[in-house]
Image: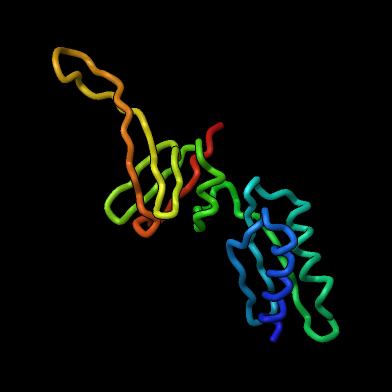
Length: 153
C-alpha cells in the first residue's frame, strides 16, 4: 500500500519539476524509502529537498512508520537513462560493451545510441613517425553494459 502511494507522490513531484527525473526507487520491508534522482542541469540539495517534501508531507507517520532518503545520482554512478547522456555531451565517457571498453568524448546522442570520439597516435601511412588520428565509435544503447563519466581533476 505505501509503495503505490509513494510512487504517486513521487510522480506528482517530478511532474512539477520536469527538469528532474527518476533514476532509482525502492522501499525495503521495513519501509526505508530510497529515491535517486538526476536532472537535466544536475541536482542541487534544494532539488532533493523538494522531492523529499513532495513525498513526506503527504504521508502520515501515524499510519506508517518510514524513513525517506532522496539523493542525486553521484558523479561516479553509471549512466542508466538516455536522458543522462544528453546532459553529458562534451564530457569524456568510459563505455563498456560485451566485447570492449571505449573511452572518448561524447559528441552525439540520438534515440538509438551515442557517438564517442577520441584521438590516437598511429604510424604514418608513408614514411617514419606518427600522426594523430581522430577515431569515432557509434554505440547502440542496447549494447552498452555500463557507461560512466570520467572525472578529471
